[in-house]
Image (tube, rainbow, N blue to C red; front, side, top):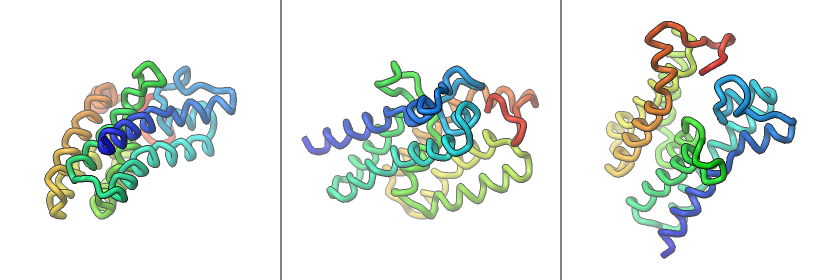
Length: 197
């Protein structure tokens, strides 16, 4: 019963639309600006840099806190992985926004930060290198996401965590379909010029 409750809690916490709530304080709605996404980048466009940063922190915590609690409760590895997936799915398909959520990168980051910070460090380095070289946030995010399962495997993480990363990575790529199309077409916005990433 406790396992079910922590998984449910993770989904509900993941469903909290941090960006929409914070932007509304500024009288803005990220769903009506730019890409319409509720993540930090678009919230920054809609309500300013500070609100965007706070959204990023909030979305990361949505993934981090449920895992932290599950580990503290000494839940089985499979349950911990399920908790991470539930928090992530909550952000992608939030109950409080009629299941229309964000792309999940920040919440996934929160999950990974508690599972294996060293894997996150590796992915972060790759993200920065890609961003410096090509200046596409979306490309850096996608490459970083793709690196995580490999990093977890090489760091001898639990197999369930590797499978979790593969599932999360696949869903993030699906959510970034439009970005991928623009990258292939050469029309994706670069850092400092972004409107749709």
